[in-house]
Image 1 (cartoon, helix red, strand yellow):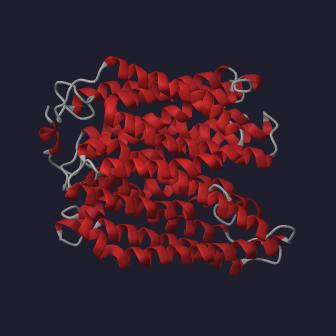
Image 2: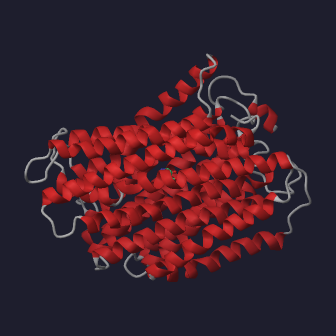
Image 3: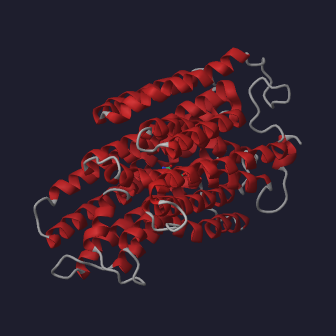
Length: 501
Ligand code: GLN
């Protein structure tokens, strides 16, 4: 099948999207399963101090998303999307198997493999989704929304099962106590194997999509890639493993790394920009604007892993079906994505038919407005607090829902617009940059969270609640300002985007 034939599909979704949906779902199961165990495992099993565990968790998150840039870059230049994905998946399996064998002894080794593997897997599967669509197919955003539901289904299941098994809350009568963590990490390996097997079968239906540059059937014709270059990439990625192990173990290194990597990737992008036509260059500038705004978005959004989890633990009651506030905070977002992603995607198609669909800039703007509303709702929880500083989980959950609506206007749409604005030979790299931005978002989120934590130090629970509420109001204002700035600069960005909407 040619790409043209794939892209001329009838109906709402191309059929290949389902295979990519499932591969990504299992990959996210593995990723979020592992991520969900990290801090708990470091504190309870490796006996790390809480602060150290949190710092190392932050470092891992930063490196994971930083490696998406490298994974995307090598996919464009040498491996192609399919081989990159496969190689990344293999590394993730190795990482999980190492952890399953002896998580106490080989913890950071296993994590480092997973970090590099995710870098090769994550951006490239998203790029392949983009290639199922013609550049201006109005159905693409709905496709990415569906794909995003798959991401969150994997996140929800992995995030729940792995840690529950590790802690012994599940299957404890089947698994001997000393082996619980091995089985939990082993589960991550098993689902990753399923992801790759599923992908092997998917490949047949992908036609020319994701072939290695220089492959005789590839859409863009070029000289074949020399084998030593391909093996060189594999070897190089293995060299990164011990490097990451060292970097993760010393928190300051993360700071240096973050200060160097961002500017370096920007410089590299500017260099690549000199090699494209003026029209293509404008589109890359537009992509960069979206990337920068996404840093602000994730910086605010990612409070969920930091300050909001402390808020949930200390300041919320159980007035929502008796659910545990931290459980709601951890999985509420993914749950709401599952509920709303597909309807919102279909809404875009429905609006498009009536010539009412907002363009990407407006969708991003809406993303910020919902984010602002959500954080404002978090602020208002203070009006329902008792004198012990305990407030309503129901309100908190409403806030989560509104924040998730914002996420759905920005995150899948961002994936989609990256594939539309990048030139054919820079797709992987730009997708990598999109995810790199979330590494910076996480980084910023950590800094904001730390500031909010110092503001409430040594105070009563009620004072702590008031301090957090004040912080969330500030974040709501920032989100609103970002949304307004986006609207103000939208005519300029529209010009840069040209025919892309
Ligand atoms: N939750 C989404 C995912 O796992 C978005 C991640 C991100 O861009 N920060 O793909």
